[in-house]
Image (cartoon, rainbow, N blue to C red; front, side):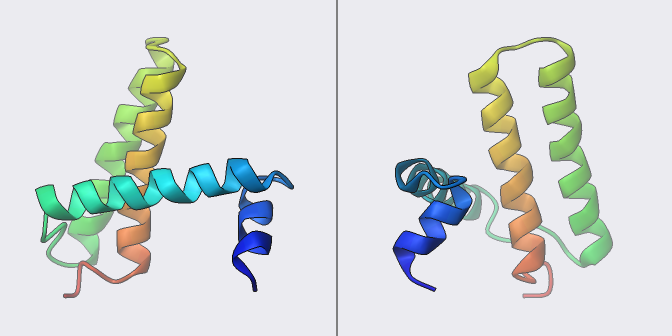
Length: 91
């Protein structure tokens, strides 16, 4: 799959939107790995981290903290889920 196609898929047909998503995820991943090099010790602790991030997203939405805060929390939730997918809890 080409980079252009990947960005179009992630952006629901909009290349720029998909590219922005990839850049946001990569930036958040870089920050998370620097702040928490070992994100979890085992899959159950990793699930706990994902759950904690999801709860922060849920609170941001429930408290109507605004789109930017909600998007930040969504990125944090996605980042922890991606770290699980990448098996970083096993490293």
